Image (cartoon, rainbow, N blue to C red; front, side, top):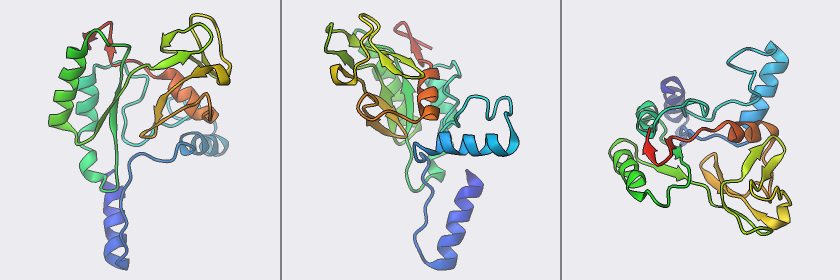
Length: 192
């Protein structure tokens, strides 16, 4: 990140144009760059074997850490990203433990300038389920009735810093795999 920031600062100085470093890349790059690298270098364990690259400076989505450790890991990088960034945490349904969420927000406020909390708000129009749908390599399925008809569900996920509806506009294969592998940073209403 430091080298990238030095490069954009140098380009700005050399050209007079306003270059900046944006730390949440295009949704398609996590899939495309991994495919290109796999074609050139083969399957490299721990690098190309997952089928996607983790965006930006984020901690790998499969790392089982509490939200504070994730914030601490990512905190050094936002100052380098003068073009934009987001730090975020994945959470289960914590409607009945808002104190835990407030504690994380308070901590994030002291450590990173922009923090998002991803909580399940999916809804099935067949059976009335609200919560988190099961994420598979082919899409999202209601855990109560098995519905996966995009016209009969509402699924919301944050990808690359924005909230989207993958039931209406599906992710590419790499991003779908990354979303499928995400772990929660707050389990069973307990911190950590």
